[in-house]
Amino acid sequence: MQPNSHLNSALALLGATAIFLIDTFTPLDIAVAVLYVAVIMLSATFLSRTGLLAIAATCVFLTISSFIITHWSDLETSALIRCLVSLSAIIVTTLLALKNNQATHDLRDQAALLDLTHDAIYVRDNHDVITYWNAGAEQLYGWPREDAIGKVAIDLLKSKFPKPLAEITRDLAAEGRWQGEITHAKRDGSSVVVASRWSQQRDDKGRPVATMVTNNDITDQQLAETALHKAESELAHVTRLTTLGELMASIAHEVNQPLAAVVTNGEAALRWLKRDVPDLTEVNNSLERMISNGRRASDVIARLRALTRKTDLIRAPLDANELLEDVLLLVERELIARDVALRLDLAATPLPLLGDRVQLQQAVINLALNAVQAMSSVTDRPRTLRISTRLEQDDKAEPPQKNAIIEIADNGPGIDPAVISKLFTAFYTTKSEGMGMGLSICRSIIESHGGTIVATSELGHGATFTIHLPVREDAA
Image (cartoon, rainbow, N blue to C red; front, top):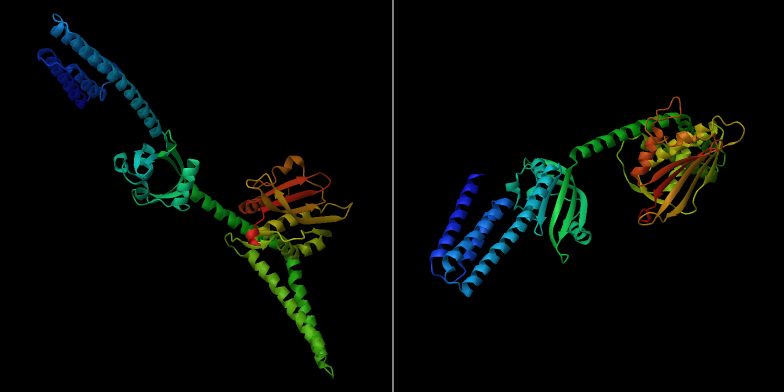
C-alpha cells in the first residue's frame, strides 16, 4: 500500500469514528449516520472492491450499533426512520461507488491496451484540446503525457494537412471518420509523415463529443517509395534508350527521307531558276516542299530528343489517336523490315487524355515492337499488326467513367496460358536475350496514369494487349 493510501485510510477511519461518536453521544435529532456516505466516497478513491465492501459493512455496523446504544431502551419511530434512511444512503452510495469503480477499472484496462500498441493514439475534444495521449504518441512525438494533455493538437504538432482543414472537418462531420496523410512536427523539431485515421465519438443525440486519432509513422515508407520511383524512372530511361537502339534503322530512315527530299527539291528549284525564263511558280512549289520536309525532319528529331530525355512525370492534355500516329512514324521502318502489314482502326472522335506523352509513347512502342518480334516465326500467313482505339463506358467504376481503349494485336503464335499471368512480372521474360523489364515498365506507366493493361491470347492465333486509360473531358 502506498503512503497516500495509508493516509487516506487513516482519514476514513478517523471520519467514521467521529461520526459514530457524534451519532451516539450527542442529542441531535437528525440522521447523522448519513455522513458515513462521505467516508464511503473517500474510500472508493483508493480501496479495491473488497476493501470498499468492508468499509461499507463497518459503516452499517456502526450505524446499527449507535442506534441500539442510543434508542434500545426508548424506541422512537422517528429515530428508526432516521436509522433506515442512513442505512439506505450507505447501501445506495456503496452500490454506486462499486459501479463507478468498475467503469473506471474498465477504462483503465482499455487505456492500458492502447498503450500496448505501437500506433500513436490521442483523443481530442471539440476544441481540438488533447484529453488522452498514449505511450505510442509519447514515443513517436517525444512529448510525455503530462506535457501533451491540455494542449491544442494542431498547435502542438504543427500539423500540415493534405487539403484545407475546413474540408476535412466537413468530411469528418458527415461521415464520422476521415483518413489521410499528415505531416507533424516532433518535440525535437524534426518532421514525421503519418497515415492518420480519425474516428468521431457522438453522444446519444448524435452530437460530436470527441475525436480519436490513430497515427502510423510512414516517413521511411515514403522515402522508400520516392527512391523506388527514382529507380523506376532510371530504369525506364535505360529501357527507352534500348528501344531506340532497336529502332535505329527506322530513325535513320525517318530523318534521311525528309533530308533527301530537301536536297531533291533544292536541286529542282535551281533548275527552274536557271531556265532562260525562270518558272517562279515551280520554284515556289519546290521551296514550300523543302520547308515542309525540313519541318518533318525537325519533328522527328524533337520526338527522339523527348524520348531520350530523362524527366519526371509531366501530365499534359493529349489525344490517344495523335499519340499513336507519332509512334507509328518511329516503328514504320521496323514493320517494313520484318514484312509486317499494319491495320489501323482509330476512333472517329478524339480520345482526350491527361498524361505524360513520352512515357505513354514508350509503353506503346514497346508493345508494338514485342508484337512485331512475336511474328518473326510466322511463315504460313501474312504477318499483321492491328492497332485500334475506341471509347468505352465503364459502368462498374465508382463513379462510372469513360475509358480510352488502345488495343495492340498480332497474329503470331500466341502466348502459353501458363505464362500469360507472369508477363508483367519484373525480370520475367520469354526472350533469350530479354531483360524482363519491358512489360513491367509498361504496366507501371499505365497504372501511374490511372489505367490498366491486360494481355489475352489464343495459341496459334496471336496475342492482344489492351490498355484502358481514363478519358479526361477537361483535357480535350
